[in-house]
Length: 489
Image 1 (cartoon, one colour):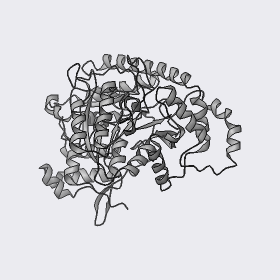
Image 2: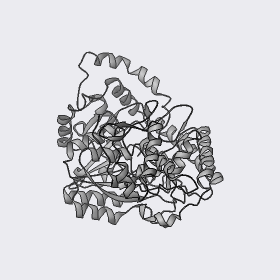
Image 3: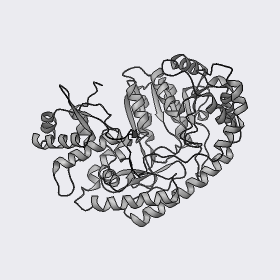
């Protein structure tokens, strides 16, 4: 059994405003919130919860109430008792999907993805002769297939960033790239600049490798979280984060940022690279969504292209085909200076022996003529975005949903700090959706919900209807004023 545990203060930060907004037993409200934290992955499985007495004292409630909440968790299968360890979390029922125990006919809003590209099977068939040739080798290469590395380098060059094969490593998707970079480039206690909100598994990878996170806010346009014209990255905060903390690295999503949908201005990209070079920091630019353009008015180069001779080397780019071709096609890449690529290759064998060969050949085949893939995705995402905005405006006129210009989701302001309650209520009506705090730190973003735009129109409509039913029950009770929670966004 793991000896992981969550402290009382850390749990209270994650709980946020857990108390019921409508009449009902407090112990059930506490049970519901801890249950959501386990389902969302904010409390990992096999984690020891605080002792009942300690949690009761810190919350200012009776131990009887906490005991009742823990009993509900145990009876529902979200914890089990271990002698000498108290209550330890677990996921009940079927194997978890995306951090949640999925059973039955659920609509899944937890994943911002697209269905497989229709030409994937044909591309696989076209490379089978090449695959037969590859079977004569070992299939083990920490750098990746030369064929795919050449295709990736050629694509970067065509997009305005001259790239050599020596600057490319093929990975098992973008998440593998993030973890490998964190494990290789971070020392325990190093600081890492991150966006707030951001991709939660990036937080996890950085923390798992000892990073101390330095958050900088990103605000979605049209979400009501900031005055018009003040959306996007906190530029002053970014500059101060580099100057004051001298981070080992920064992890940023400059194009169609997850979850806000924002794109970083060109001048800020150049400034970030200057700030990083000045401090000897590295900038990991996650560009996995960069080509999912619907109607963005500006065109952007790959992030490293905004540096000059003295700053471009600070940029490390991550890409993959999970968002464009298929999430099940676990192929990604890292573009960095050759010395960094060699360092990563030397560290890689401790975790894996290389990327599957057949998948690399398929991706190389697709990259040779990638424009049809992107054209189809743009059409699909435009239709999904328009459907989401239309149905939200009809069912939730009080919500504020940004009209994103690309990417896979929109970051919706609910107007009240009830995202976790809404996510729990939606499960009862057949919808899995991730609460806003999953994308933040220490319980932030209870006023927000990420809604994907890449599903079929009928799925999006059904999912939002389920949200409407759940919202009806959540909004019946008194809801604290949203401005009381403004400090968390």
